[in-house]
Length: 115
Image (cartoon, rainbow, N blue to C red; front, top):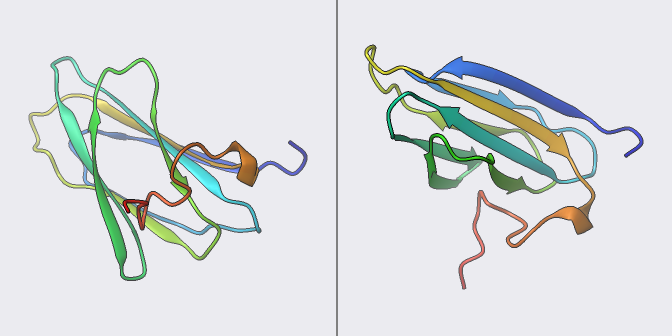
């Protein structure tokens, strides 16, 4: 995709992860999150923008990252709370600009699409 834009990062699973992501341009984004840990566990991801907030449970060790759709708009925050000093693992994330037609299911995983 011409002019594609992405940002990515990794952090120890002990956290906390707080990423304030400045979204730019006029295309929506996907926020991909994966975690790896020696024991079966999950992390809680909170996505927020303005007064809207949603919470998601992400299972570590999945073959594919969980993908969340972020609509065009201002910056948003991704948070994973502190899980404790004795917790081993890694959280990896990536934000990609995408074409609107490439979004699957709900177009806004911050506000949600429940009817």
